[in-house]
Amino acid sequence: MGPVWLDVHAERIDNEEKEILAHPSVGGVILFARNYHDSEQLQALTAEIRAAAGRDILIGVDQEGGRVQRFKAPFTRIPAAQSYGALKADASVAEQAGWLMAAELIAHGIDLSFAPVLDLGFACAAIKDRAFGDNPAEAIRYARAFTQGMRAVGMASTGKHFPGHGGVQEDSHLVTPHDPREMLHSSDFAIFKAFIEEGLLDAMMPAHVVYPHHDGQPASASAFWLTHILRQQLGFKGLVFSDDLSMGGAHVLGDAPARARAALEAGCDMVLVCNDRDSAVAVLDTLPITDVPAASQLRVAKTIDWTDLQLDTRWKSARTQVTAHQAKWEAATA
Image 1 (tube, rainbow, N blue to C red):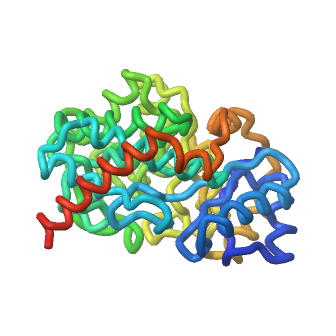
Image 2 (image 1 turned 30 degrees about the vertical axis):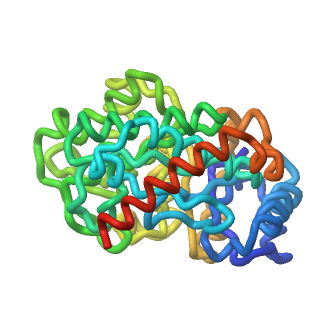
Image 3 (image 1 turned 45 degrees about the vertical axis):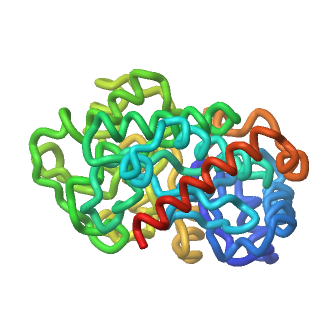
Protein backbone atom coordinates (compact mmCIF):
# COMPACT_ATOMS: atom_id res chain seq x y z
CA MET A 1 0.00 0.00 0.00
CA GLY A 2 1.62 3.23 -1.17
CA PRO A 3 1.75 6.58 0.66
CA VAL A 4 -0.37 8.74 -1.68
CA TRP A 5 -4.09 9.44 -1.29
CA LEU A 6 -6.02 11.11 -4.08
CA ASP A 7 -9.60 11.67 -5.22
CA VAL A 8 -11.80 10.66 -8.14
CA HIS A 9 -13.93 13.02 -10.20
CA ALA A 10 -17.43 11.58 -10.25
CA GLU A 11 -19.85 8.81 -9.30
CA ARG A 12 -17.98 6.27 -11.44
CA ILE A 13 -14.29 6.08 -12.26
CA ASP A 14 -13.04 6.73 -15.79
CA ASN A 15 -10.26 5.03 -17.74
CA GLU A 16 -7.61 7.56 -16.70
CA GLU A 17 -8.50 7.03 -13.05
CA LYS A 18 -8.28 3.25 -13.46
CA GLU A 19 -4.72 3.71 -14.72
CA ILE A 20 -3.83 6.09 -11.89
CA LEU A 21 -5.30 3.84 -9.19
CA ALA A 22 -3.11 0.98 -10.43
CA HIS A 23 0.04 3.01 -9.63
CA PRO A 24 1.87 1.25 -6.75
CA SER A 25 2.31 4.50 -4.81
CA VAL A 26 -1.45 4.98 -4.43
CA GLY A 27 -2.52 3.88 -0.97
CA GLY A 28 -5.93 5.48 -0.61
CA VAL A 29 -8.83 7.36 -2.16
CA ILE A 30 -10.82 10.06 -0.37
CA LEU A 31 -14.41 10.59 -1.50
CA PHE A 32 -16.44 13.80 -1.64
CA ALA A 33 -20.09 14.75 -2.04
CA ARG A 34 -19.71 14.73 -5.83
CA ASN A 35 -18.95 10.99 -5.63
CA TYR A 36 -22.31 10.19 -4.08
CA HIS A 37 -25.73 9.70 -5.65
CA ASP A 38 -27.32 6.92 -3.62
CA SER A 39 -26.48 3.84 -1.60
CA GLU A 40 -26.31 1.40 -4.50
CA GLN A 41 -24.09 3.68 -6.56
CA LEU A 42 -21.69 4.28 -3.66
CA GLN A 43 -21.26 0.57 -3.00
CA ALA A 44 -20.57 0.05 -6.70
CA LEU A 45 -18.02 2.88 -6.71
CA THR A 46 -16.01 1.57 -3.75
CA ALA A 47 -15.93 -1.90 -5.32
CA GLU A 48 -14.84 -0.36 -8.63
CA ILE A 49 -12.01 1.56 -6.97
CA ARG A 50 -10.65 -1.56 -5.31
CA ALA A 51 -10.91 -3.57 -8.52
CA ALA A 52 -9.00 -0.88 -10.44
CA ALA A 53 -6.26 -0.76 -7.81
CA GLY A 54 -5.92 -4.52 -7.94
CA ARG A 55 -4.49 -4.65 -4.41
CA ASP A 56 -5.11 -3.56 -0.86
CA ILE A 57 -6.25 0.08 -0.80
CA LEU A 58 -7.96 2.30 1.76
CA ILE A 59 -11.06 4.38 1.06
CA GLY A 60 -11.94 7.31 3.30
CA VAL A 61 -14.21 10.32 3.60
CA ASP A 62 -14.88 13.26 5.90
CA GLN A 63 -18.18 12.25 7.48
CA GLU A 64 -17.80 14.03 10.83
CA GLY A 65 -21.35 15.34 11.00
CA GLY A 66 -22.76 18.84 10.99
CA ARG A 67 -21.50 20.88 8.05
CA VAL A 68 -18.88 18.24 7.19
CA GLN A 69 -20.93 15.27 6.02
CA ARG A 70 -20.38 14.22 2.41
CA PHE A 71 -23.10 11.59 2.14
CA LYS A 72 -26.70 12.44 2.90
CA ALA A 73 -29.93 10.37 2.79
CA PRO A 74 -30.31 7.46 3.30
CA PHE A 75 -27.29 8.05 5.56
CA THR A 76 -28.31 9.35 8.98
CA ARG A 77 -27.69 13.03 9.52
CA ILE A 78 -24.94 13.20 12.14
CA PRO A 79 -25.07 16.23 14.49
CA ALA A 80 -22.30 18.78 14.67
CA ALA A 81 -19.69 18.04 17.34
CA GLN A 82 -20.50 21.31 19.15
CA SER A 83 -24.10 20.23 19.66
CA TYR A 84 -23.43 17.67 22.41
CA GLY A 85 -21.91 20.12 24.86
CA ALA A 86 -24.17 22.97 23.84
CA LEU A 87 -27.25 20.89 24.66
CA LYS A 88 -25.60 19.26 27.70
CA ALA A 89 -26.35 15.87 26.18
CA ASP A 90 -25.37 12.62 27.81
CA ALA A 91 -22.11 11.38 26.35
CA SER A 92 -23.88 8.23 25.19
CA VAL A 93 -25.55 10.28 22.43
CA ALA A 94 -22.13 11.14 21.00
CA GLU A 95 -21.12 7.50 21.28
CA GLN A 96 -24.22 6.41 19.36
CA ALA A 97 -23.46 9.02 16.69
CA GLY A 98 -19.91 7.71 16.27
CA TRP A 99 -21.14 4.13 16.05
CA LEU A 100 -23.87 5.02 13.57
CA MET A 101 -21.61 7.07 11.34
CA ALA A 102 -18.98 4.32 11.21
CA ALA A 103 -21.42 1.45 10.70
CA GLU A 104 -23.14 3.17 7.78
CA LEU A 105 -19.83 3.90 6.06
CA ILE A 106 -18.47 0.40 6.56
CA ALA A 107 -21.68 -0.96 5.02
CA HIS A 108 -20.75 0.95 1.85
CA GLY A 109 -17.18 -0.32 1.58
CA ILE A 110 -15.50 2.65 3.27
CA ASP A 111 -12.70 2.12 5.78
CA LEU A 112 -12.26 5.53 7.37
CA SER A 113 -13.98 8.72 8.31
CA PHE A 114 -11.21 11.14 9.22
CA ALA A 115 -12.48 11.77 12.74
CA PRO A 116 -12.62 12.84 15.52
CA VAL A 117 -11.81 16.54 15.38
CA LEU A 118 -9.87 17.24 18.58
CA ASP A 119 -9.41 20.97 18.07
CA LEU A 120 -10.50 23.25 20.88
CA GLY A 121 -12.95 26.13 20.53
CA PHE A 122 -15.28 27.50 17.87
CA ALA A 123 -13.61 30.74 16.73
CA CYS A 124 -11.48 29.34 13.91
CA ALA A 125 -13.05 29.67 10.46
CA ALA A 126 -11.88 26.17 9.54
CA ILE A 127 -13.27 24.56 12.70
CA LYS A 128 -16.35 26.32 14.14
CA ASP A 129 -18.96 23.73 15.13
CA ARG A 130 -16.64 20.84 14.24
CA ALA A 131 -15.10 21.13 17.74
CA PHE A 132 -16.52 19.11 20.63
CA GLY A 133 -15.93 21.89 23.15
CA ASP A 134 -14.13 25.08 24.09
CA ASN A 135 -12.47 23.62 27.18
CA PRO A 136 -10.39 20.43 27.35
CA ALA A 137 -12.62 18.54 29.81
CA GLU A 138 -15.78 18.98 27.73
CA ALA A 139 -14.04 18.30 24.42
CA ILE A 140 -12.40 15.15 25.77
CA ARG A 141 -15.66 13.86 27.26
CA TYR A 142 -17.70 14.02 24.05
CA ALA A 143 -14.88 13.28 21.60
CA ARG A 144 -13.94 10.22 23.66
CA ALA A 145 -17.49 8.90 23.48
CA PHE A 146 -17.75 9.55 19.73
CA THR A 147 -14.43 7.78 19.16
CA GLN A 148 -15.41 4.81 21.28
CA GLY A 149 -18.54 4.44 19.16
CA MET A 150 -16.47 4.43 15.96
CA ARG A 151 -14.01 1.90 17.24
CA ALA A 152 -16.72 -0.37 18.66
CA VAL A 153 -17.94 -1.07 15.14
CA GLY A 154 -14.43 -1.56 13.78
CA MET A 155 -13.47 1.82 12.29
CA ALA A 156 -10.05 3.23 13.06
CA SER A 157 -9.93 6.73 14.53
CA THR A 158 -7.93 9.68 13.16
CA GLY A 159 -7.37 12.62 15.52
CA LYS A 160 -7.07 16.02 13.90
CA HIS A 161 -5.57 18.60 13.64
CA PHE A 162 -2.46 18.04 15.78
CA PRO A 163 -1.32 19.89 17.87
CA GLY A 164 -4.48 22.04 17.70
CA HIS A 165 -6.05 24.27 15.04
CA GLY A 166 -8.43 26.14 17.35
CA GLY A 167 -6.07 28.93 18.43
CA VAL A 168 -6.14 30.75 15.09
CA GLN A 169 -9.02 32.42 13.29
CA GLU A 170 -7.78 31.94 9.72
CA ASP A 171 -8.88 29.04 7.54
CA SER A 172 -5.95 26.82 6.52
CA HIS A 173 -7.88 25.79 3.41
CA LEU A 174 -7.01 29.29 2.16
CA VAL A 175 -3.89 30.54 3.98
CA THR A 176 -1.17 29.34 6.35
CA PRO A 177 -2.24 30.49 9.83
CA HIS A 178 0.34 31.35 12.50
CA ASP A 179 -0.42 30.56 16.13
CA PRO A 180 1.97 32.62 18.29
CA ARG A 181 1.09 30.98 21.60
CA GLU A 182 3.92 29.55 23.66
CA MET A 183 1.90 27.31 25.99
CA LEU A 184 -0.23 24.80 24.11
CA HIS A 185 0.25 21.94 26.56
CA SER A 186 -2.47 22.89 29.04
CA SER A 187 -5.16 23.60 26.45
CA ASP A 188 -5.29 22.38 22.84
CA PHE A 189 -2.36 19.99 23.19
CA ALA A 190 -3.86 18.34 26.30
CA ILE A 191 -6.66 16.73 24.27
CA PHE A 192 -4.30 14.94 21.89
CA LYS A 193 -2.08 13.89 24.79
CA ALA A 194 -5.05 12.41 26.68
CA PHE A 195 -6.26 10.46 23.65
CA ILE A 196 -2.81 9.03 23.00
CA GLU A 197 -2.39 8.02 26.62
CA GLU A 198 -5.79 6.29 26.57
CA GLY A 199 -4.95 4.46 23.35
CA LEU A 200 -7.92 5.95 21.51
CA LEU A 201 -6.18 6.99 18.29
CA ASP A 202 -5.13 4.78 15.41
CA ALA A 203 -3.98 7.66 13.23
CA MET A 204 -3.25 11.37 13.45
CA MET A 205 -3.60 14.29 11.04
CA PRO A 206 -1.54 17.44 11.72
CA ALA A 207 -2.56 21.02 11.04
CA HIS A 208 -1.35 23.28 8.23
CA VAL A 209 -0.60 25.80 10.98
CA VAL A 210 2.76 27.33 11.92
CA TYR A 211 3.54 27.64 15.63
CA PRO A 212 6.50 30.08 15.36
CA HIS A 213 7.47 29.86 19.02
CA HIS A 214 8.26 26.18 18.43
CA ASP A 215 9.11 25.78 14.72
CA GLY A 216 9.00 27.69 11.45
CA GLN A 217 7.27 24.99 9.41
CA PRO A 218 3.58 24.10 9.41
CA ALA A 219 2.98 21.17 11.77
CA SER A 220 2.08 19.04 8.74
CA ALA A 221 5.71 19.26 7.58
CA SER A 222 7.49 19.77 10.89
CA ALA A 223 9.89 17.15 12.21
CA PHE A 224 9.70 18.96 15.55
CA TRP A 225 5.98 18.29 15.90
CA LEU A 226 5.70 14.94 14.12
CA THR A 227 8.92 13.23 15.15
CA HIS A 228 10.17 14.91 18.31
CA ILE A 229 6.84 15.68 20.01
CA LEU A 230 4.34 13.20 18.56
CA ARG A 231 6.54 10.13 18.16
CA GLN A 232 9.29 10.58 20.73
CA GLN A 233 7.72 12.64 23.53
CA LEU A 234 4.12 11.37 23.33
CA GLY A 235 5.00 7.87 22.11
CA PHE A 236 2.36 7.80 19.37
CA LYS A 237 2.56 4.51 17.45
CA GLY A 238 -0.20 4.97 14.87
CA LEU A 239 -0.08 6.30 11.33
CA VAL A 240 0.25 9.98 10.49
CA PHE A 241 -1.72 11.41 7.55
CA SER A 242 -0.98 14.80 6.10
CA ASP A 243 -3.98 17.04 5.70
CA ASP A 244 -4.79 17.77 2.06
CA LEU A 245 -1.62 19.17 0.51
CA SER A 246 -3.69 21.06 -2.06
CA MET A 247 -4.96 23.34 0.70
CA GLY A 248 -3.67 26.90 0.73
CA GLY A 249 -2.06 26.32 4.12
CA ALA A 250 0.44 23.88 2.58
CA HIS A 251 1.51 26.03 -0.37
CA VAL A 252 4.35 27.62 1.60
CA LEU A 253 6.12 24.27 1.18
CA GLY A 254 6.49 24.63 -2.60
CA ASP A 255 4.92 22.76 -5.51
CA ALA A 256 2.96 19.56 -4.99
CA PRO A 257 5.93 17.14 -5.10
CA ALA A 258 7.87 19.39 -2.71
CA ARG A 259 4.93 19.48 -0.31
CA ALA A 260 4.63 15.70 -0.38
CA ARG A 261 8.36 15.20 0.19
CA ALA A 262 8.39 17.71 3.05
CA ALA A 263 5.46 16.01 4.78
CA LEU A 264 6.90 12.52 4.39
CA GLU A 265 10.38 13.56 5.50
CA ALA A 266 8.96 15.29 8.58
CA GLY A 267 7.15 12.15 9.72
CA CYS A 268 3.90 11.69 7.77
CA ASP A 269 3.28 8.14 6.62
CA MET A 270 0.65 8.97 4.02
CA VAL A 271 -0.10 12.19 2.14
CA LEU A 272 -3.37 13.50 0.70
CA VAL A 273 -3.37 15.35 -2.63
CA CYS A 274 -6.98 16.19 -3.46
CA ASN A 275 -9.00 18.09 -6.06
CA ASP A 276 -5.97 18.73 -8.26
CA ARG A 277 -5.36 15.89 -10.71
CA ASP A 278 -2.21 17.39 -12.23
CA SER A 279 -0.63 17.75 -8.78
CA ALA A 280 -1.56 14.19 -7.81
CA VAL A 281 0.00 12.83 -10.99
CA ALA A 282 3.12 14.96 -10.46
CA VAL A 283 3.49 13.54 -6.95
CA LEU A 284 3.09 9.97 -8.22
CA ASP A 285 5.62 10.59 -11.01
CA THR A 286 8.15 12.21 -8.68
CA LEU A 287 8.12 10.27 -5.42
CA PRO A 288 10.05 7.02 -5.17
CA ILE A 289 7.79 3.97 -5.00
CA THR A 290 7.45 2.96 -1.36
CA ASP A 291 5.22 0.74 0.72
CA VAL A 292 3.38 1.60 3.95
CA PRO A 293 2.64 -1.87 5.33
CA ALA A 294 1.31 -0.52 8.64
CA ALA A 295 -1.53 1.17 6.73
CA SER A 296 -3.29 -2.17 6.40
CA GLN A 297 -4.14 -2.02 10.11
CA LEU A 298 -6.62 0.76 9.28
CA ARG A 299 -8.73 -1.53 7.11
CA VAL A 300 -12.03 -2.54 8.66
CA ALA A 301 -11.79 -6.08 10.01
CA LYS A 302 -15.42 -6.99 9.41
CA THR A 303 -17.75 -5.96 6.61
CA ILE A 304 -21.38 -5.01 7.21
CA ASP A 305 -24.27 -5.59 4.84
CA TRP A 306 -26.30 -2.40 4.34
CA THR A 307 -29.63 -4.21 4.18
CA ASP A 308 -28.87 -6.21 7.32
CA LEU A 309 -27.72 -3.06 9.13
CA GLN A 310 -31.08 -1.36 8.58
CA LEU A 311 -32.78 -4.32 10.25
CA ASP A 312 -30.41 -4.28 13.22
CA THR A 313 -32.01 -3.17 16.50
CA ARG A 314 -28.90 -1.23 17.52
CA TRP A 315 -28.93 0.73 14.26
CA LYS A 316 -32.61 1.56 14.77
CA SER A 317 -32.04 2.64 18.37
CA ALA A 318 -28.96 4.71 17.54
CA ARG A 319 -30.71 6.37 14.61
CA THR A 320 -33.70 7.29 16.80
CA GLN A 321 -31.49 8.87 19.49
CA VAL A 322 -29.21 10.69 17.11
CA THR A 323 -32.06 12.01 14.98
CA ALA A 324 -33.85 13.30 18.08
CA HIS A 325 -30.69 15.08 19.21
CA GLN A 326 -30.25 16.58 15.75
CA ALA A 327 -33.80 17.92 15.85
CA LYS A 328 -33.10 19.62 19.18
CA TRP A 329 -29.93 21.16 17.79
CA GLU A 330 -31.75 22.47 14.73
CA ALA A 331 -34.40 24.03 16.95
CA ALA A 332 -31.76 25.59 19.22
CA THR A 333 -29.83 27.11 16.30
CA ALA A 334 -32.77 28.17 14.12
